[in-house]
Every structure is written in structure tokens, then in C-alpha cells.
Image (tube, rainbow, N blue to C red; front, side, top):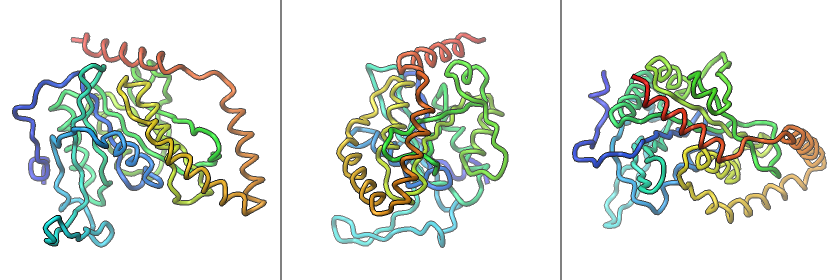
Length: 290
């Protein structure tokens, strides 16, 4: 099986893209409580974002784990909804970049072919960088704005944005495989991760989604509508507060996490303007290379 067997594209007749960047989030191993996919879905809400490519789900999923859904359409005809991995184009005519957005589902099978499909879309559309976003359960307080951390195997990009080089060793998901293959193909890539409070289980965390969107906006220079999550953030903050207040041990644990978080963030952080300027400088240098 190869990319041509599973990937459908709609590139013909597509108007030229403006310095496109690919942004990816996949529900599964690297997306606790669907924080990352929720962020990218919010980014695309109520805007024209045509599908420019899609990956056939059939070869990639164990449908006893990721089951299709049956639903009634507008005409009361029963239809099926399969796990969807579609690349959508979001144009920003007055901004630095257009975005190719994949907010999909991590496959169970054939990781290599799935990654090759993503890389094919990125290279055919001349994406300068691929950014993966994810969320992990961590010892962080729900009462603070969560920090977004990033890494890149690309030395120039890591240096430009002050990112760490990946040091993790162990089992990984699709994102880990994709980052390795992007590095091997010398296509610059960044992995961004936000922490969500582990003590709240699979409750929703719109504050973490907003933090990811805010960071993307700072770096990429495109509006991400993160402010539109403010009502959901307040609602879930109240629910989280109530859950913790009912347990004295949880309240004491929260106070400890708050102290640790405040100590870590005392040092001044790089401003959004500086991050964006460094990112654009890196891209210019990439374009100037022979």
C-alpha cells in the first residue's frame, strides 16, 4: 500500500498559497481530553475552510476501537460517519501565512503510510514548517493559565524560537513517528504541548485549548479566535473549582501546585512579538538557502 492508494487531493486549480504552514492535532495518544483537536476545530469554526486533501480511514483503523457512527441526515436517511482525517485550507490574505489544518484522529495501523500521506500534502503545498499540537496530563493547577512548551529536531528552528531538542525515549504515538520522518526528510517541524491538570481526569479544559491557540497566534501571526473560548473557560473553571472544593486533600494539593507554578513562571518569558519575528527570520533564511 502506498500514498496514492489512500490519499485524495484537490490541488488542481487551487489559487497560490501565501507562505503556508501546516498545523496538526490528532485525537488519541497525544491529545488528553481532546484539548488540541478542540483548539484547531475552534480555529476553523464559522469560516470558509475547504478540504484540499483527505486520507481514507479504511486501512488505518480498527473499527472495534474507533467505531463509525450512524446518524439521520436532513432527509431522515440513515448515514455513516467514519473517522475523518481531512486537510482544510484557511486563508489569511492580510497576514503572514495561510494554514493547512488537520484536526483528525490518530490511526491504529500503518503509521508509516499515514505519515507519508501527511508529508506528501505538506511538500506538494510547499508548507515551510509543520507544527503538531498536543496535550498531556501533568501536575499543573487549573487555576493558572497553562504553559505551552515546544521542541524541534531542526537546529535552526530550535535556536530561532528557543525550543528544546527532543530528548524523550520510549513508546510513542503517530506524532512521534511523524516528527522523526519529517526530520529525516529535512522538513522543519515543531511540536507544541500544553499541560492539563491530571487530577481532573477527562473533564474539558478550554483554558488549555486557548493557551495553544494563543501561542500559535503569537508565533504564526494569524488570528486564532482564542478569545471566543472565554465563556467556556469560565464555565469549566467554576465546575473545576467546585470539584476540588469538595475534597480537602485536593484543595491542599492544588495550593502546592499553584506555588510551584508561580515559582516556575517568575522569570520573564519571551514576548509574542519576539517569537513571531524570530520565526519569520528563520523562514526567510530557509527561502534564501540555495
